Image 1 (spheres, rainbow, N blue to C red):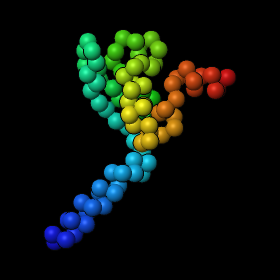
Image 2: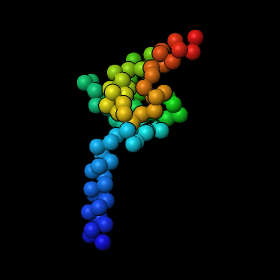
Image 3: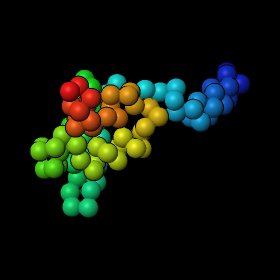
Image 4: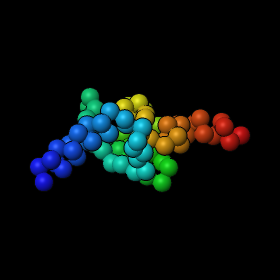
Amino acid sequence: MRSSLIGKIEKARRYAQEPDRVTFSSLTAVFRGNNDEHALSYADGRWHCTCNFFSQWEVCCHTMALQEMLRKMLPTEALASPMETQLIEK
């Protein structure tokens, strides 16, 4: 039993070095900003953040930071801002 656990730990370490194996379909997080904490989520192809800026622009520094941090693990549509998507569709 111990050897099988050791094998799983080694496999997990290899997987951790290959973030492109993982693709998030949804997530939730709390972002500690300079002034407040903000609840972020990604689900059904859309981002959401509780900060005031996001309510007007549908993008903010918090969502952009998560996009950058998780770039290799997000689906392509999660990396595009709503403004970019609107330009592409027109």
